[in-house]
Length: 394
Ligand SMILES: Cc1cc2nc3c(=O)[nH]c(=O)nc-3n(C[C@H](O)[C@H](O)[C@H](O)COP(=O)(O)O)c2cc1C
Image (cartoon, rainbow, N blue to C red; front, side, top):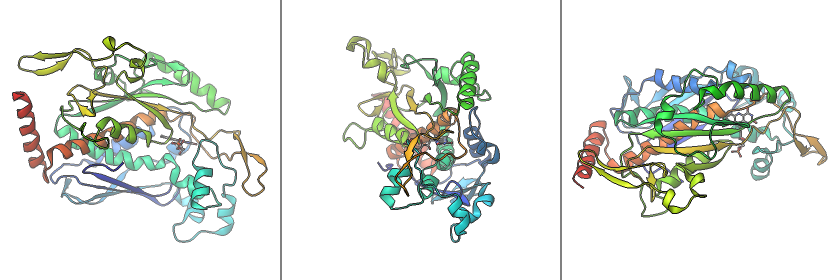
């Protein structure tokens, strides 16, 4: 589903020379601080349970277009992120030339269940399944995090803040199904902790679970709460199914590699409640406007933001690359053969939260600009202020 006003194109292979991103549709005059973008890239690499690669990569975004003196010009914003281990992969992954012998050694012919390897090979007719792995790899999400950081900067200008926290990892569960959470819980997440868990006291058990999984060659998934506060009412629309913001958020979240389920607010818990306990009573507070006594809807009704915090839970499956390889088939012999193993994470749940924040920032920035229009930041601000003044009179 395309974005309404913004667009994000990413390019690059996991072990190619670099990742490239192009974000279009931003207004002029937005200040972009590369240090803030790099901070989010570092947050994506942080977290217990990542493989050796995260120690090699220290991602930095290099802006190459659309920015002058740290301010957007209104044109496409382009950036690059180097793959620091490309040097050792150059003979295998060179964009123009590769060495046949080196490439043959790295050829992937036993597809990993749970990965794009086999389905992508069948679709694109590539018998070296590395051609699929390299692009399907979650390395691509570094570009999304960089673009998301730019969108986060835009949203912050209008008082919208985005955070996340881990709700469960493997069988260490803080809350399932998630219910009754608020943005305040996300503000308490310790960014420097191993897992960025919503309840710090669960982290020791999470560490033990990851250590045990690593030792036995297994992997773990988990759940993450991602939220936004300060989101004005009136983003998205009920008028057509493609405009509904809940659907747009769902699509963005499900596009994150390994995310297989998404819920909004108390969405899962609500399915098991009666109607009288599932919705959010409406109140009017003089001087403040319309408010809700609770936020079970997660800030969205009819595909439109209602002014409450937007709260989304994403569910990540366990990493599909297992040390001993899951049962698979060799595509040359068609005989049973364990799936290939390549250096891999035990869990990517802490990183998943940072990527989910980026995707929420992208979708909310898009919906805000869709509502306001405007080619420059002052124009966007003027239009938003006008809309908010109308709401106060409503
Ligand atoms: C931050 C992050 C890191 C990941 N790291 C790995 C990894 O090291 N090994 C692996 O097999 N899968 C990893 N994955 C998951 C795969 O990228 C994903 O399962 C695969 O591309 C198939 O896509 P699908 O799970 O969405 O169907 C990671 C996912 C994320 C979000």
